Length: 71
Image 1 (cartoon, rainbow, N blue to C red):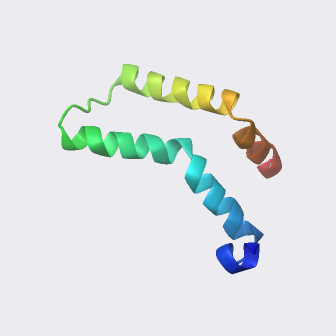
Image 2: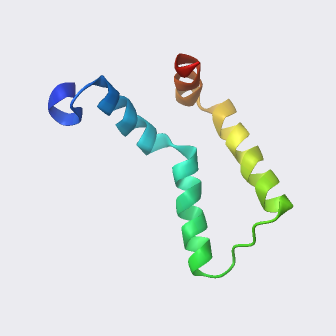
C-alpha cells in the first residue's frame, strides 16, 4: 500500500512531515498575517518563532524520532 499511495518509503516520510511540519504551519500563519498587514518581523517576533519551534520539537515525539534518524 505504501508503494501504491506514496511511491516508496521516502514518499511516506515526506507525506508525514508535510502533515506535521511546524515550519509549514508557521509559514501559512505568516502568509495570512501578511495579507492583513499585521505582520511585523522584529527581534521579539523571531524570538517567539524560535521558542515555539523548540517547544514543538520538545513536545512532539514524532519529530524527535525523525530528527534522531536524520542525525
